[in-house]
Amino acid sequence: MLGFLLFLVGSIKAQETITIPLTNSNKEGFLKIGIINGSISVKGYEGKEVVIKGIKRQGKKKHYKIKKSNRAGLKRISNNSLEFTAEEYENTVRITSSPQGTTDFEIKVPKNFSLKVSTINRGEVYVENVNGAIDVSNINGKITLKDISGSVSADALNKDIVVNFLKVTSGVPMAFSSLNGDIDVTFPKTFKGDIKVKTDRGEIYTDFDLKPKPSKAKITKGDEKGNAYRVKVERWITGSINGGGPEILFKNFNGDVIIRSN
Figure (cartoon, rainbow, N blue to C red):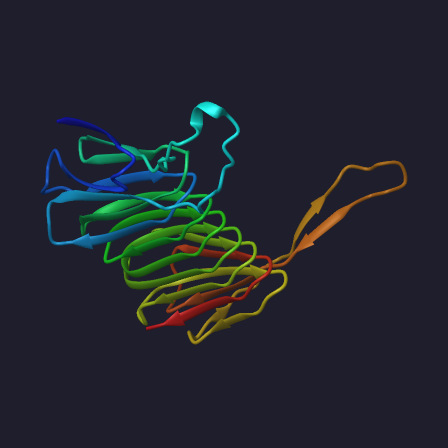
């Protein structure tokens, strides 16, 4: 089954909601969305279709001086057009949006859904009540994952990453990275994993009983330039939780790493 929908909505209408049926509603689905400007919210629900609401964000009003005589006496109409596409093929739904302006998306998916979600500017990523493999990236906004079951790979550049797991897929490695924000992840008390943590300008906190594991510093040797010789030494904190398991990596530069139990 292949469904392809293209929406170009006039300047008066600033939002549109569409429903995408799945090829097989009894199987897990996969949502892919990557945008330049805007927020993305994805929530799991009891339905069997993907519901997509696109909202064109109002920009700041700009005042223009009429320089041409043939514009005199005319009223300028704001261009608030909305354009995005949604395509479904074998339970994979792909959403793309015009890079012009800022469009926010509110999406509902069946609970058993995997996600690949990214945005760059002017927005946050919020995911709630989803069971699957989640890959999420945000350059200039916060990432919040609430009541998640499954596995996560998350990276943010300039804001926090906050994740709350209800259940973790066993045997699957995960990774969380940030440059200028805190990483705050809550796991179930019974979670098992091998933790690898590094933050350059932050602190590390946990209420788990973390059993330290011996680790060697990573030494990277650079090229010789004249009389100069560069060696970079990196030391990670490693340990096991509840007997250990797959590797869970936390890497931060200018923020704290918080690993909580629930």
